Image (cartoon, rainbow, N blue to C red; front, side):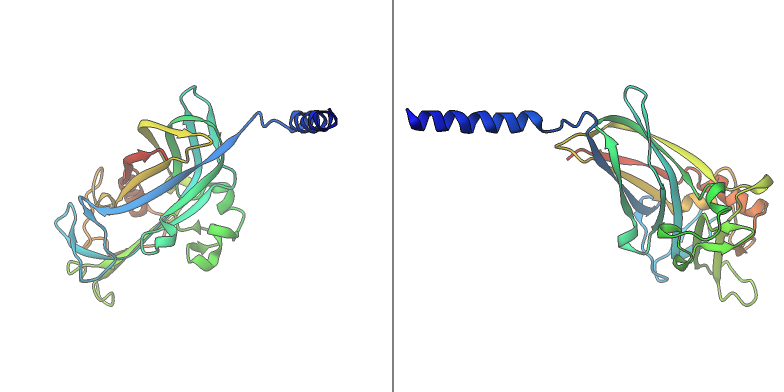
Length: 254
């Protein structure tokens, strides 16, 4: 009888403690955004000995390929939009540690699309040098009056015969204000939902095609444009072209 009383008291205390535990009414999870870099149907190799052909029939290799992804928004099946805070990510095709990132604190649900800016919004450009992925030490902050480099492509091409460049082309896309504002907003619909749940952290695999820099709506010749690093019509043409360089490969719900 005494043992039964003790057992009853233990069970009562156990359930009493469980009853008092706080219940999370707004559970959240994460989404991984992963970028696979390509040149058309071929994986992009950062090597001067590996060549690709662009829409102008120029042969080129790639040495540097970087770009900012910012202001990420995930739209759920019911139309709710989640906006990532402090949403600035530097993607570097030449650095395996900078080809993916995790978006945290995403409410549980089924998500049907992602949108983001290729570049850095005007507010952060006007705030001077920042920290984290916006740290100037990463080499993507240009000048105080032009702000950050939104995207950078550097490589070699035999078609580049400009004096003193040794066949090297350099494209640094900048410009956050005025007629040459180069930020590009991208929305990518999902073919199947990205399911954020206690048992699932989806990975959104995206393809970034470097060939898009040279085509649609503007066919760009490396010989004619071996270099750009100021806001002008040339940089805007590049931004118009690469606005569609990122597309969906697949969604992995795991």
